[in-house]
Length: 120
Figure 1 (cartoon, rainbow, N blue to C red):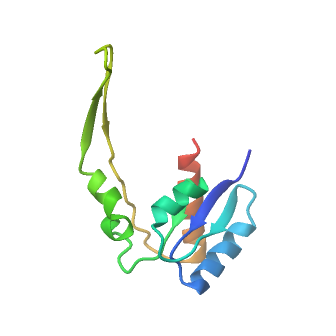
Figure 2 (figure 1 turned 90 degrees about the vertical axis):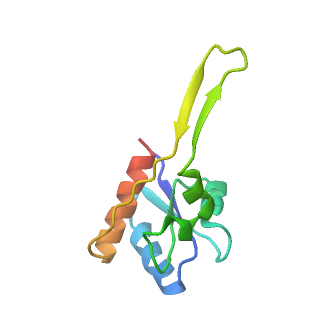
């Protein structure tokens, strides 16, 4: 099984070094370090990474991570086939889980869980 790519965006250099070191020792995860300033979600998608790690002053604020993603989460789309043969309703429902402890092992466990969830 191929390793899941984890994209690091907008992380201070020391934090990026710590996360990179934690991930490099695992066979199921690979790390790609991105630059600062570019939209982290767009950059991760362009890199083909299903998991992105960012640093924000309020990590629980989805709008601070990606305003478009936060707005899209408030929208539902009903799509109808041109011939009216089928239809589908779409909605994004973001979920969040606050980590009680922010230790390297807890952060690595959260990254690994996110990677596993995205590759199922």
